Length: 237
View (cartoon, rainbow, N blue to C red):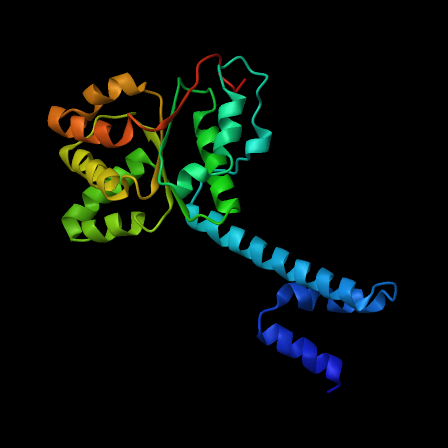
């Protein structure tokens, strides 16, 4: 085995896949200096690891579909503040454990915008988890029955950003109310939560049902969060 092949084999075992993939290509280019070759290979390895991490984060997030902030259409008449979205795009709010509420009627692009913020968080290396409210609350109801409730709640705390979509499409059961309160209590000021709802925040107290629990939930999520209130024609046309 020649020395070049031995080096390539070692890089493969060390999972230096970016360097491994580009080594022969750069070796053929005699116009590059040694410094340029090293810089190119290091950049290739960095890109390779970044892309693999991004793939892992987006797969773990379980997004319903792909969305990107750069693809948001600001020409539609839906009261969407581009400056606000741009300010949120650096994800500094996640670093400091702040929350975001996205509300508006059906079809105006709430879920797309919320998901795009989630993808942006993944791009910047933050673990994200996305769940539809009905699916999550059904899972928690079942977890109450089989003794895995605390395990499910603990799993949600692993993520720097938790996205709850379609909140308010159906009334909350007592288990769902208490679960939402526990999730928000655990995450409050430590990790970020993004809630997407057709219902304006002013309706959430009645939607939650129990006045005492509703007060506690709104105290933790509604008053100091970033609010994206969208109105206008459906974007699905």
